[in-house]
Amino acid sequence: MTTAARIADGTIVTIHYTLTDDTGEVLDSSRDSEPLDYLQGAGNIVPGLERKMMGHGVGDTMQVVVAPADAYGEREEMEAQKVPRSVFPADAEFEEGMPIAAEGPDGEMTPLWITHIDDEAIYVDTNHPLAGVTLHFDVEVMAIRAATAEEMEHGHPHGPDGHHDHH
Ligand code: ZN
Figure 1 (cartoon, protein in one colour):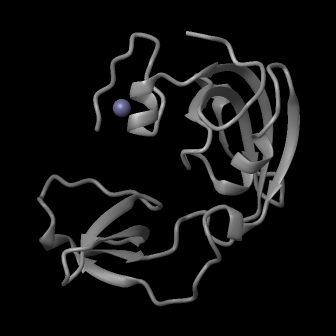
Figure 2 (cartoon, rainbow, N blue to C red):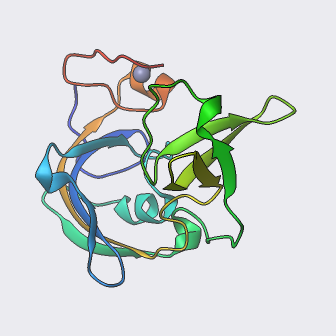
């Protein structure tokens, strides 16, 4: 592995981040667990953040504000669709904000998210839970290295042992 001094397309970047909304509420933080590895230029992270990462070096810290259009999109007003629990296996477990892939009539997969749940049904719409939310990232660059050929081909980082369980 070679060490790359600056973040550029084709580098694997390790960051610690804390994500808050406009009110300062913490939505997500890597500080609770392991730092995040991503491949710069592959769309692994939201576009507005990925752009601001370019050119930074290890040890850099920054505050990045990302508008919804550069993150999870604007929130579309729509009525949630009701899906009876009976269409799912009896042991299926659901949570608000959980993604569910639905297959459309043309076989295309549409991502849906659960908006709420009751005893007889789940309710879904096409808004990502963070649609319409301005994201405030507090980021620290922990490490940068060149991606391997395999990582470039897959479009995502692999762990230190080179193994991963997805494709
Ligand atoms: Zn892979």
